[in-house]
Image (cartoon, rainbow, N blue to C red; front, side):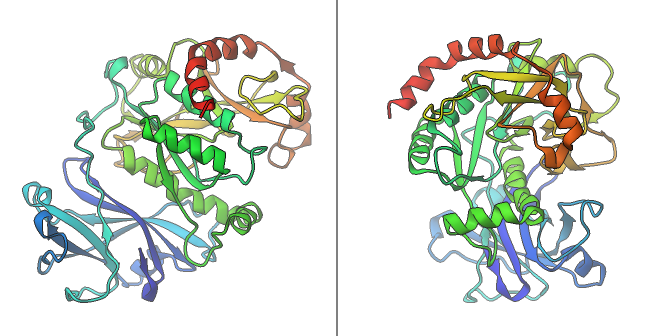
Length: 426
């Protein structure tokens, strides 16, 4: 949904029923404008609500005077890069303006504007429909993740937007293995966000979606950004700072998509896998971490340290597989380098690639980094990323390789091999 006049692009809107009140959370982008600065300069933004009765979807009716002032949160930290010359992303919060009984009977939409005047029903305005909770899925009622039985812990896994043009970048075999491994470790839901993937990969993902193994969300870059496959991928690869910002849209959409039905959201890439080393699955691991008696406040994120896995003599004609011959580096990255987190949906308002960014209140702990003997994030690479780590660290990483991960991966393959075969035969 686009507000061309004010250069605001709305991606999605969700009903947030946490903290004992209703809020509408809107994920939005704006180019070259920091909505926070506008609001600071008394250029306020307003939420305009449109309600339509279910039985009158065609025309519906408008509730009068449903306009509230919006609160705006920049999904970023100024220390990372303070410039505005990008598509920046925001969470726009509209406070609750109606009771639950009224809401249940309506189709609800929202529009963001600097104007606080009523919009006439015949105005050509693009309203964003508000996503309500899926009543077919049990809702999360707990206010804390501490003390929940392991079998009751719900975890959703999401990817950033996938942009792969051919099978050498992302093979159908790899994506099946990756998804089935998330399920093996007890992911209740897996959300796959897609810019572009090869046709055979998309076909398999669509089949898995039909079988309720994954949720597929097709996305595009905002505004005037390119969205043809080749130009889109080139744009993503060549514009690193914009890429980092664009990623925040699917990441935060994922968080709100699953926040009412899952206790944790884990955002990882398709070349990454969280391996529990002391437990059978993530549920048992998280229960162990959360119930050691040390917690004085609700955790925001539980972070897993990164370790690199390198390909060993893969035949050029061999399809990429998570279970090919690999060696793991003995060197585990420091806790603030490339870790990924189980983000607590009870305590966070916005998320970043590696952790929960803004907390829901001040009585929430910072990111908790677990010990490397409890779990590791396996990160598959052809070679060490010199640009990020530097030559000296990469030499140390690549010169200290072990193959003890072979047993772990072999055991995992046995558990999921039948599901892999089923989808590979499509």
